[in-house]
Each structure stands twice: as C-alpha cells, then as structure tokens.
Length: 223
Image: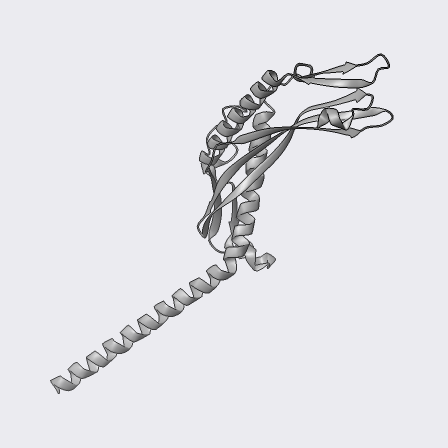
C-alpha cells in the first residue's frame, strides 16, 4: 500500500512538473511571437520619435546663437550693378558653426538625461523619456490603445555632433536671388525601449543666413 501511495505521488508530481514545463514553454513561445510582431512597429516608432526629438532639440539650441548675416559675407558688384564676387568671412562662419555645434551637443546631452537645457533653460523630457505609448496601441484597435505595458522611448548620444556649411542660391522674384547659408548637423543616436536597442543617424539642416539680394548670382561664384 505504501508503495502504491508513493508511486501515485510520484506520478502526480511528474504530471504537475510536465504541465508546468508545458505552460512555461508555451508562455515563452507566446512572448517570442508577440515580440516578433511588435519589434518592427516599436522600432519604427522609436526611431522616428527619437529622430524628431533630436532634431527639435538641435534647432532650438542653434536658435539661441546670435548670427549677424552682414558679418558672414560681403557682395561685390561691377559698374552695372551685377554681382561679380562674394567674400565669405570664413573665420566668422567657422566660429558660428563651432558655437552651434557646442550648443547642440550640450542640449542633446541634457535632453537625453531629462535635465534642464543649458541654452534654452527648458526641460524637454522628464526622466529622459522621449515618447511613451501602451503596447495595445500597436494592435490598431482604438479600444486597446491604452491597454498593456507602457513602452518608453529613450535616446543616448553615441557620437559628437559634426557640422558642414552649405551655400546655395535660387532665383527669387524679378531679377533677385535668394542666398542661403545652411548648417547641416549630424549625430548618431542610440534608441532605447524595453523591446530594442538600435542606432540611427540624425541629420538636421538649419538655415543660418537667408538673404534676398538684388541681381543674379552666377553659379560659378556659389560653386
């Protein structure tokens, strides 16, 4: 009788263990399937939101830099009033670019940590959370959009900001030219959520100087 009771207990224990292993395996499979379905959507959302956030922070940082267009370039005309030369103050322009990159870097670092921006004196993202959404949002069902665990998007700055000045001109109105000096700032972000960790490049084009001048500017002067 004791042997039968012992055998019965062993059988129950084995059955319960097997059932537990089965449910654990099925749970893992379910988690993997959910993760497989959510991963592309979460990645796309997170990269877009982090890139938009970084671009916004960069633009606001650069807007705090005082730029005087007259100090950046000087036009030379001939007797007929045609533009024959544009002299760029490279020292001034390089100084402006350096200040813009420094401001952008410090603002991005502060935003990623959820701290006060040293340039605008604003806190953009409390706790460094760029964007938050419930997992149910990705089902596409409105009733489930506020259901499920919350997915928080964070960003970290992987590389220092780099910049390039670009000059372009376009015809504007009658016998006028729109002259622009743009600063293109690039950096690399590490985008973080509970579901992923991925890097993405960010490029932000910011007009530093926009000036309408009378007359046409020959292409060879710009190039």
